[in-house]
Length: 217
Image (cartoon, helix red, strand yellow):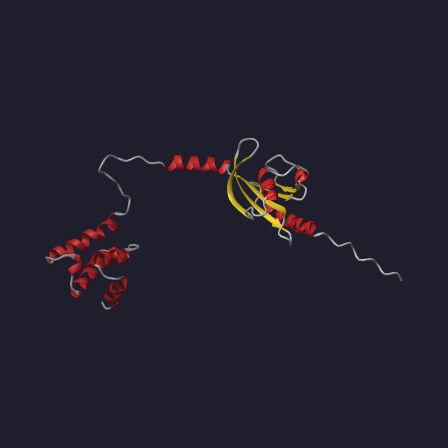
């Protein structure tokens, strides 16, 4: 029985482009519909495009390389990866692009995968959001907060407690601190979220110290 001849060996360039096509398909389908992914064969610059996913630019397989592709072909020192550079689609929509050069074992650029993301829609959304959240001052020197009244009274309660003892909040004795915590607990102020941290900051101790006092009641 005659032996079968082994299949012809694929060139390194074709192998790289075959694997690059897998990446282009996967990226295009993952980032659809806003991201066009194009695979270029830089060994044939006049017919560089060999695969395209999510066609946003109106190009087709067999079209020529872009200016960036030609620059990469001409310069072996050209950056291998250029990320998020400004671009524009044929109809004027804003885009940002990323270009990844593919080198063969000799170091020559033979291919490139390019991602072109339509950011015009997101830019419009951002404009609407910025307009929506824009605020105006009430008047000079006046501001407002919508925090619950009790939450805002924690600092006042601490300072009034210190004043009744003719001292400052940071000068309270350990016994005073225990009395302060008991008073705040009775008023329900310690049940508010972040209350312990707020009290600790006002009287100048750590939360650990306050919890120590609370646990020794």
